Length: 124
Image 1 (tube, one colour):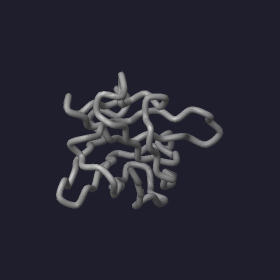
Image 2: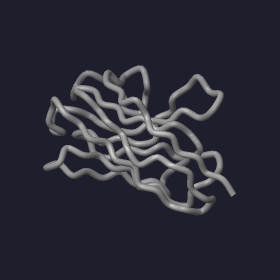
Image 3: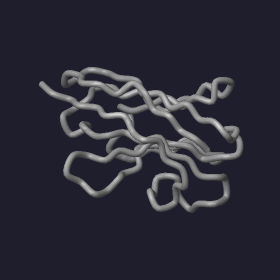
């Protein structure tokens, strides 16, 4: 699976942004796909939300602000981010793993495929 993110940029506090991820190589039915982020200075990539045959899952801290959606025909995954805060500043990664090959699509070690990331900076 090849993943290509786009849409990252600088945005003001309280603003909104939509990221896109175009996938190739597998159909969405065959994979769990989602978004992670890595904040400046951190070694960890935290799962934000993902979509699998079990439905949508979100990290508690972004529930109600971030929404994942898909365009299956275009094999594109979106991340709509609202009410952005400085702590949302990160590089955002699109990730995927074949269905059945993971325990949680919000755990970085379970994800097989990663895009190169797109940076988001939130400032006042």
